[in-house]
Each structure stands twice: as C-alpha cells, then as structure tokens.
Length: 341
Ligand SMILES: [Cu+2]
Image 1: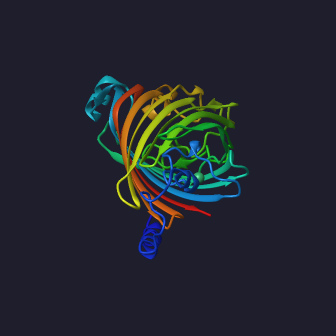
Image 2: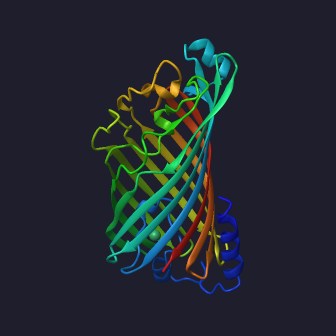
Image 3: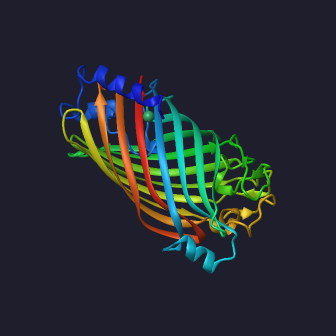
C-alpha cells in the first residue's frame, strides 16, 4: 500500500490541470466512446476494438466479531455455547488486483486478472491467550471474456446487455502454513479461509445490463461461480452467486458519485482437508463457511484527461446470515486506478 500513494498523488497532481474531456460536456456517443462511467463490476465492461485498459484495485476487507445465523456472538458466548479450544476474533485482508483488458472487437473484451492477498487472523484461546496467524501470496489467476450481446438507444440513452465467462486457474497456494501456540513451534496447515487459492479450476458466468444517459448510468450484474474439480487436498471450495446493482451520476465536469448494493450467497465446502482439526477452531470446520450477505456501498470517481480514472468506494453489510459459526463482515474499502490506452 505504501508504494501506491505517491504514485496516486503524482498522477492526480500532474493531470488535474490538463483535463480536456469531462463528464458534462460529453454527448451520449462520446460517453459510450470514452467509457466514462466505469461500472463497479469489471465483468460487465467492454471496450472498443484495439483498446487496452489496465486497472489496479486495492481493497481492504475487515471482519470483526463472531456470529451465527443473524446473531453476533461475543468470545464469551462462543466458549460457553461451543466446545472449540480457540476462536477467531477478527480478520483483515488486503488485496492488490491488476486487471488487463483488451478488446478484440467492439463487442468482445478479454480480461486477465492477477491478484495478491495478505491475510491476518486474530484469535483468542479458551485459556485467554491471544495469537495471530498470517498468510500472503498470489491468488487464482482469472481469464475472462466480456461480450455485449445487445445494444439499443431510446430518447434518454443507451442500453447494453452483456454476458461474462471466466476460467479461474488453480495458481494460488492451498498449503499456506503458520505457527500457533498449539503447534509447538512447528508450521501447521492454515484453515480454508486463510488459503490463497481454491486448488481447483473454477468457472464463472454472468449476465449484465446497463443504461447510460448524458447525466447518469445504472446497471445490474448477476453472477455464479463454482469449482469444476476437487483439489489435491480433498475438498472443493463453496459455490457462490451474487447480484450487484449500481447508480452513478456526474456531479461536475470530472467528478461522479455512485451508490451500489449487492446480494451474495455462498454454499458449502464439499469434501474436507484432513490436515485440519475441525474440533479445535471454527475456521477448520468446513461447515462454518456458507451464508448470505446484503451490502450497500458508496463511491466517488475522478476523471483525468479522459484517460485516467481514479476512484474510491466503501461498502458495509446491512444484513448477514451466516452458516454455522464464523466471523461477521464489517467493511470493505477499495481504491481504484484505471488507465485506458
Ligand atoms: Cu475496462
């Protein structure tokens, strides 16, 4: 994160005085042309033939406190109601994502995503001790295609429909280890949620729609993802489905703001990793992973010279229903830097 800030500030200061293109002066054709309103979901995003886009996203996800179904539980509740020797108390995840998008035609854009994760989980033991485990490294690489299937204009603006397909490669580590007070100084296998990859090939499919007018943009994206095979450790990560919706509006020549909402469903892990002891800590038990989350977010976006876009977003869960016993989601903060060539 530290290396990113000077870069970010340098770009803002260098280009903020040179802005020529801006939100309010655009005709509808130009808005579509320059892709000013980048949707918060990159999976429903296409470019003109030959265009290359590089996007860097940084996100920080915080989970804090335990819960079961819709109820928050204190550490005291966990040790009273369950037999686990250890409970997680909080987790922080920092993710750096690099997306490369290249449009082979006006309808079809290919995308490659690389990401690096650093996770830190805080724990408390039944005896009152505290400890932290960490893992970090590159995650599963995604190769995707975004395709516009339909487009039409009415008197207000331009409507587009998209399909999305991805293949995720099992490049992320599923053997991440760390020491704990119970491991006697040795390295032990970390639980499912602290692993960097899925260990499986995964497929992801999506359907999206958006509408662009001279002043605003809104859209929705529905997505489903699942593992195609069991990994070498003997399990298959949970399938996921999500629905994202957003609204973005221009507030000045180069400034826009947006609101978004998402619903996420996650199923169960199938099979199990025999290196983990599910009686020791809730995270080692595969039954403590699925759930449903509803989140609301807000974002701001700043356009620089029609080429760069910098943005920031924050989202909070408004409802969560957790399978078994797990950490409750608290917040997600994201910084975005996009360059279109
Ligand atoms: Cu793009």
